[in-house]
Amino acid sequence: MTLTVFIRYEIDPFKRERFKTYAQAWGQIIPRCGGHRVGYFLPHAGTFGQPALALEVA
Image (cartoon, rainbow, N blue to C red; front, side):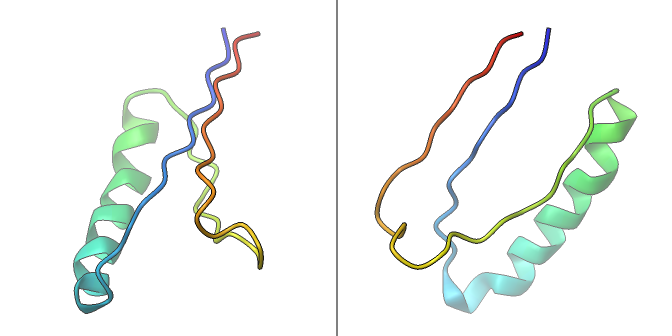
């Protein structure tokens, strides 16, 4: 079974360092639990404000 998860974050611009620490922690946690972290992606122009949620089961 393949599971793809998309999470939308709203980051307080004054707490970017805290989010960086949070994101780096997941880089260690996910592989330790047997998963594969692909990465973080920023939306391109025109996609702000449109929620993206997808679930793929193969």
